[in-house]
Image (tube, rainbow, N blue to C red; front, side):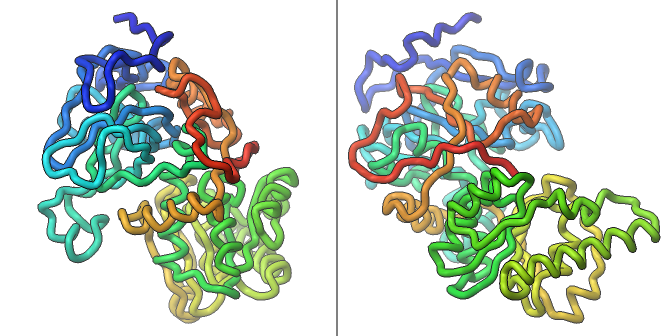
Length: 415
């Protein structure tokens, strides 16, 4: 079915009234594959809110790699996560509250919001006494659920809503949630970042790293960024890093898997050389290593972090199977901490830093709603140079600001 997106920024209904249909980018199981094939624009029924749910008119959406996985159906099909026959992805959004369900009292139609992506059932006891991230029902909205942000309207739990920072345009406000809130939990609550800490940040110019670097500066910690070019290193320094290291100078330290004994000796020697360089540039061994690369870097992370130090990890983009010399873990009493997104309270506290202008989003490019599939194809082919935002209800870039203040940093970034 052909869907006209030329008037997508125009609605003939007011907040509080939902139209019957909407334009949405949809993935279906039978066409899983490369993003340009998997994503197709369809006319869909607008969802209705249930108890404690909210329908948000999406003004802009953020693009993350999780919906490249959704398109591919790998490493697992999203249709094994939810029972719908369609998948509308998108785990970052800024927008306007359009309708609220029974029990919602904090938000009303017309409120301007950003959406965080953690969902869990209110019936799970972990939500009320431990941490929603421990709940059996915990899911990432717009990846493990449908009704995400690549549509004119999305359906969310009321607890997912945060105030939209007034100094940010719609596309800027849609760009930071998943990555910034993940970095916040990793450093602030999991690794207990403190003033004076020394922190090594892998991929410091990437989506997670740019926020980790800013959090270190804000906390009075010294950070050293690992990057892939001088240009990215200078960006990291401008965000507050003490210095940077070009990883290409230590390419031999990267674990590729199935190394021979002699190859492993060479790799270990390179990791030791890297560790000496890190300590020299940081003024000592790192208290914390900010890890999300996985197999390629993890043996080096465990080696170079100081005794009693912490390696905090939220992902494994180079491979999930980790192989390292565990003697450097137990004999030097180091800690490995896993971290996964953030809970609502952490999202709220992190968002206040954005509102205050103490942390700024870093945005590479803004694309139109008709380019959702193209944006994911760029990510799939590794041709993107930073964070991508999608205009949905916003007619053009720069709209939505209602106060003066620092906006997003516009830059090419990447690991």
